Length: 341
Image (cartoon, rainbow, N blue to C red; front, side, top):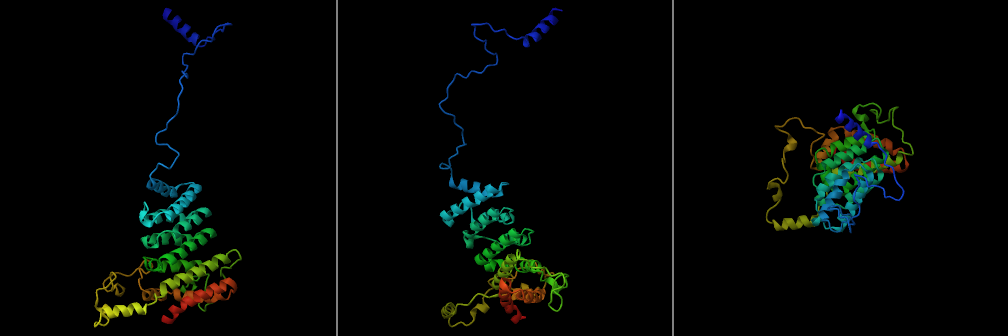
C-alpha cells in the first residue's frame, strides 16, 4: 500500500502547478540550457561559399556534372560557365578533353528549355573541332531532335547539324549510319518517300497525292531550314574535296622517277576491298560506313532515295518564295548524283 501511494503522489507532482510568491525569483527548470557562453565565430568545415580557394579543375568538373541537373536554370548556368571557362583556357589546359565535354552535353539537344538549347549551341561552337572524337552518338541525338514533336527542338537540332557539317563534314557523312540514316530522316520529314510506294506523298508520275502535307506560314521557316541544311549535307557527302595541283606537283617531283606510285602503296584505309563484299553477309545499308563520295552516291541511288528526292524537290520549287529558293539549292546538289546515275 505504501509503495502504491508513493507512486500516485509522484504522478500528481508532475501536474502540480508551482505557486509563485511575490518578491521571490522563479525557480529554474530542470531541463534548462545554459546559454551564458559567448562564441567569437562559427566555423563550418568544407562549406565555404567562396570559390577562390578551390581547385579550378574541381569547379570545372562540378559544373560539368550539373549538365544532368533536373533544374533547367542549373543546366543553363552550368553551360554558360563552361563556355566562359573554355574560352579563357587553352585547349591543352582543359581539365576534361573536348570529346568528354561533348559526351556530357549531347543529351541536352533534346532539352525542353529554349535557353538551355541556345546556350548548348554556344558551347559547341567554341570546342576544338579536331578533338571532338567519334560523332555517331551526337548525330543520333540530332536525328532524334529533327523528328521531335516540338518545332523549336526541330529548329535547334537543325542548328546542331549545321554546326556538325561545318566542323567535321567528312566525319559526319562517313560515320556508321551517318549517311543513309540522316537522308532517311530528311526524307521522312519532307514526306518525299512516295517514290518507294508509301502512301500520302508522291505518286509515280512525280505529283503529290491527296494527303500532301500543307505548308502553313508557321512551318515555312522550318521547311526552309530543313532544305538549306539538306543542301549542305548533300554537298558534304557528294562533293569530293578540291585537288591542290601545286601540292600534287610537288609530291610528284619528290617521287621522281616513279610514276603513279600511290597506286602500288599499301591502302590507307581499313578494309579497302570491303565494298565488294566477297565473303561477308548481307550488308546493312543503313548502318554501314561510306567513306568515299562514290560509295555514298551509289548507296543514294540504289536505295531509291535519289528518285524520291528529285521528285520531291521538283514539287517544292513550285512553292516559290523562300521555299522555292531553298529547294533550288537542293536541286543543284542533286544534280551531282543525277549526272553520275
